[in-house]
Length: 187
Image (cartoon, rainbow, N blue to C red):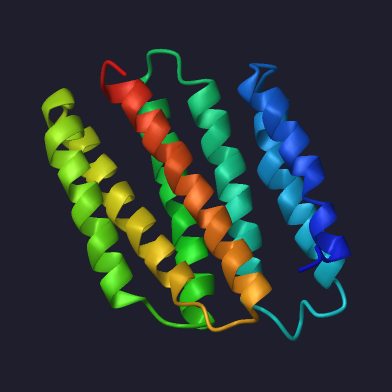
């Protein structure tokens, strides 16, 4: 299997992610989803009218940038933290919407995933969260994240598109899991 040339463009967000993880600031955090949105627009510029559902993915990237801004500037503010989580929730709605417009929910996969993540929530996160609003927000975010991954698994597009999309949403979910462990537990 050969890598299609457009996928080589993903080296750019990968390099930006390395700088973001290394702590070089908000610009690099925002540049990861920002560069992905730009790559989509550039690659699909001639097909955007025929593929209106792609705008949900682009909007998801923009919500991710806004969520990163709130989380990067939260300090000790509960409201900034909650707004960041809320914006990421909207990003997952975009991922979910795109996936459902191009397939269907993979029910068994989603049930297994939800079971694991609900166990994680009730065993690790629930005891660590003492604020009811934050508890509900985190639970809703967990649910929409699992549903967006379950829908990504059920996409009915070309295999390279399906598995690339699935891998991307998986990475978002794994990243969010690490963030949750870091923010709410002693890990």
